[in-house]
Image 1: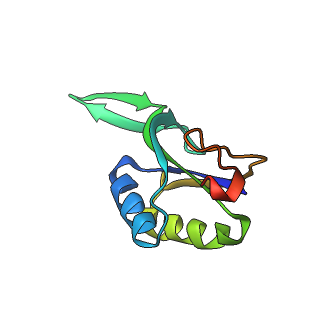
Image 2 (image 1 turned 45 degrees about the horizontal axis):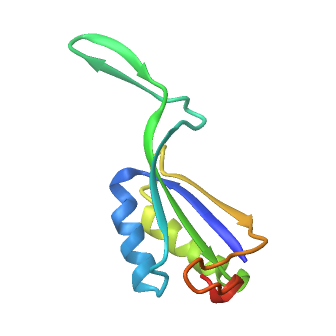
Length: 112
C-alpha cells in the first residue's frame, strides 16, 4: 500500500478531486496547508510598499491506494494540477504499513 500526498494550488484542488473521482478514486483527504518551495515565497507590492509572502496557501490531497495503482493516480494528480508555472506543487509517494477501517475492522487493501 502507498499513500500519495500532493501539495497543489488551492485553485486546482476541485479539479484534482473531480479527476480522481472520475477515474474511480473517490476516497481522499484534503487539507489546507501553508508552505514554500525553492522560490521561498513571492514578492508583492501593496499600495506602493513591497513585501514578501514567504508561506503560501496550498492544499494537500492525500490518497491511500494499492501499490499497482500508484503510477495511474500520480498521473491523474499531475495532469489535473499542472499549470506549468512556479508553485504548481509536488507529489510524494510514501509506504503504508497497515490500514484499518474503523467501522468494519477491514484491513489493508480492503480498508481503502
